[in-house]
Image 1 (spheres, one colour):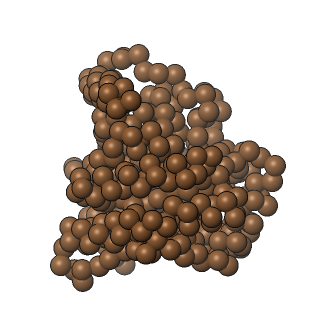
Image 2 (cartoon, rainbow, N blue to C red):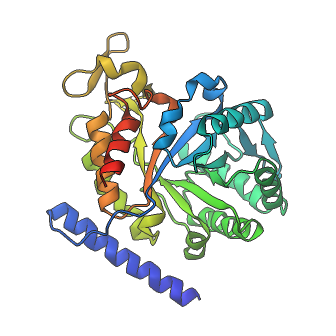
Image 3 (cartoon, rainbow, N blue to C red):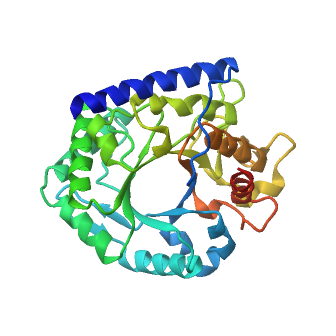
Length: 342
């Protein structure tokens, strides 16, 4: 079994290298056909859809999978803590708007956090990993997660444990994911990953159903543009070079902008789409910062790339940053137009 999985991983790496070189040189490498069940996965932050009017029925003719975010976390002791009112209200609203459409809904769970009061980002991540490892070793986390997922009849669970920056922490995370898959084999498991930091084990890759590849908070070195099509597509194959099957990967799309100086501001597309210049920039006079946005043409280009290169889908962070898909300037509408044409 292990040798078979190792062989698959080596083969996947070789294919990824070939595709990456071919893309960089403009060579046709015989890219795979679009996935027959191409996913359009959207994170929906619970508190932002507490009012059902924030949701738009037509959007779920495009969205195939929902990840409900910001309503659940787990402690270092392995206990699951819910924002019960927000979770139940948001979930009911989402299900009401979806109606009888076949849309999967998963619950995102955040783990214990830690701050070293500014000592260093690396120390924060190390201490956070230690807290997560306690939860993974608690012996109760898997069953507690299973109980919540089954009680609310979620299709699966997602995790946003993004930066276990040491291999030993990735190994503990991997073992937990394998254990969770055994505890609830009839539910899906998804994890968010960064292009630069994915050291999941081969057996955990088998256990995880979906990888949300966060191809944002990345910048063009020349002019500071945030998550351009060129940068995102160039980086997208790093995950496959780790042995993750492309069809399990959702290509991440930002429905927000960051300033060109990388400062800690996140501006949603919905509020600024009609204020952009001809180059997709918005200049904030008060902050004296420029923000570059992914507009419908950029989102469409990325979606087309994901479809034509065998990715399992795209992933949106996050839903309420956009206009309703009935609006001609909607980013989700741009995704829908590409997926419909393919």
